[in-house]
Amino acid sequence: MNQEQLKQSAGILALNRVRNQSIDKLPEEYRPADLPEAYVVQDQLHELLDEAGYGKRVGYKIGCTTPVMQKFLDIDSPCAGGIYNTATNYIAVSAQFDNFAHPGVECELAAYIGDDLDPTVDGSPFTKESVAPAVQAVFGAIEIVDDRWTDYKKVDTPSLIADDFFASGIVLSQPKPAKEAPDLTSTVGHMTINGTRVGEGTTGDILGHPYEALAWLANSLAERDRHLRSGEIVMLGSVVETQWVERDDEVAVDIEGVGGALVKFV
Image (cartoon, rainbow, N blue to C red):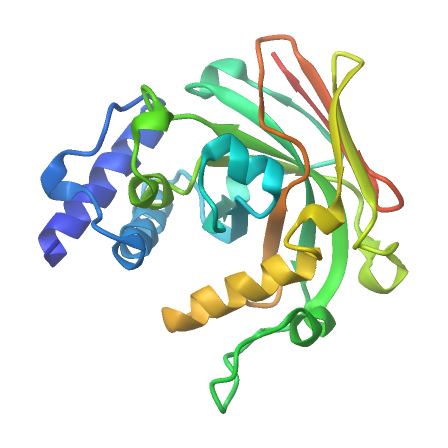
């Protein structure tokens, strides 16, 4: 796409988001052809949503970092989207069900970035060891996802990425200093809906270690001349399959030894 088409693509997605509507597919002439083009549209989407007062991006979510989610979405590699200040919540929150097109929830580990992760001078890739010192704290977290498509299973991956890969909101536990966190290769996370456990997994399901997902994001951003900044939050991926919710559902997650969070849809 040329620059005007990229802007039009982002504009369609931004308007759809602000109006809280569902969309079938992007028109073919405004559909990103590949992942690099998808992230260009996504960047412009973030700018438009900021200008519209929807929210300012304050971090990132990473999807498809666990086998359960890769199988669920039939996508075999991580995908990133944005997190907004207006949709960042702590501990427990009531969410207006009508503010979503088709809401769902996921059980995640999140990271608070304490230091900028600038690209390396020699161009060497980030690793889980090199990103670890930048993590100041971790959280147990709920990601509230929103399916803004008529049938997301028929939507191509670049289009999903352009639209923030289902990102909508987050609820974070109290922060756990990273140096006090349990072994993140084996920490158990689980989710309940209305008191019934609906899934569990371990943080080691996230690419073997959650910081591998963080390294993936740092490398992906570096390829686009961007980097993670101090103060940003990164959702590292769900250890349970996405659960679609109904009005009055109450969802709780707990990452054992890290923290828990709750959301009720009203």
